[in-house]
Length: 488
Image 1 (cartoon, rainbow, N blue to C red):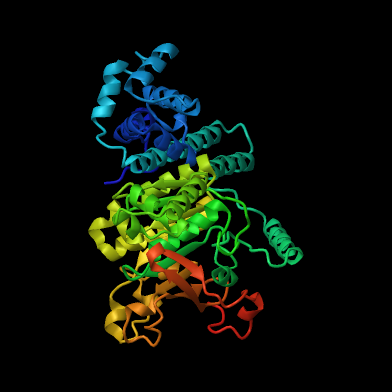
Image 2: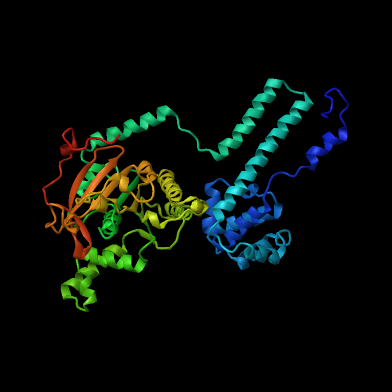
């Protein structure tokens, strides 16, 4: 039976309830963050700072001191490991308060890998958010019981306090007028600089004319069946961006831009060797045959010299998950100011948290994560992707469609641009089968522009794509009479 509302209330019950409650926190999650930081401090501390987490996010005082010590070491670019952190705490007089060196060893032993750091950080952030809400709510409750202020004043202050918690975790929304003003400034800039691209040049006139360059915050999918050359085209674009343009045509802005590359399939050695031979226009078969002419050797040396100066940051770690890739990309953007990110390729990524829900659900999460990463970093992200076997089984033409993107339809939905690459010489039923150099890039989706097919040359022995020699590309050719129109 429920107690009577009018009956006596025992003070002990009212007084004991709040004091008996322990504020929400997760000691395991806090230990997980600190143990991960002892293994990979740069990445873990950067992840914490990106989410606005400082020492105050840790409930236990020893953990707060330990986190702040490691954060200071990272900011000072000092090495972080078991010995250096122990010495730092000892210098600060906090070693015993943090449990001594034995506790540091326990943290390291209880966290076998730093791969799950982002999960631990999310838990610590969630508990800190709850404690922040409780603290501000308790202040409002105390003010209400005190009855010393006007009720509306207490309400206003309580609203401000709660909203201040949300502002910490939510980005500031810009004013609409500022957004319109910025859009008009970009329009005026284009009008005053006719022919200048709005985004990064790919190094190909025909492709730039359709895409208007690779736009910031866009996720661009380059998809093909195996062995069609998608990695070659992707790395050719990397070369052009990082060296300031296409040496063959002069297409580009002449300014080298830093590029980040995640190669989940090929090793860094294979990828670099391919880029050197491709730029030098020397067949790799020559090296395998054990013979290079003097000219070929000179061309390789010249290509290597140019590529050594290119600001390319290559990560060939196998088996990366989408959250791990996003964290590493965030660090690349911060430390190297990369202007383009290339992922080769999407189906090699994983998303462990959703692995049990089926591959389609997992790929959907990967695609959404890559799109969110492009928006967060504010740069174009070029993602290579596999196509399913559907084109080969549908009809003899084997022309790919958007629906052929492998594993998930969400890739098509999330992408801003989808380019489908095919080579007619690989299909004996294609009317252009005899043209061994023809490669067709079908811009099948373009959120902010026209869709059309682009003919290119692919020199297979050099693994190199070039524009087809049809004269200069006229941007007006992609106007009202352009086939395909604009993508909705």
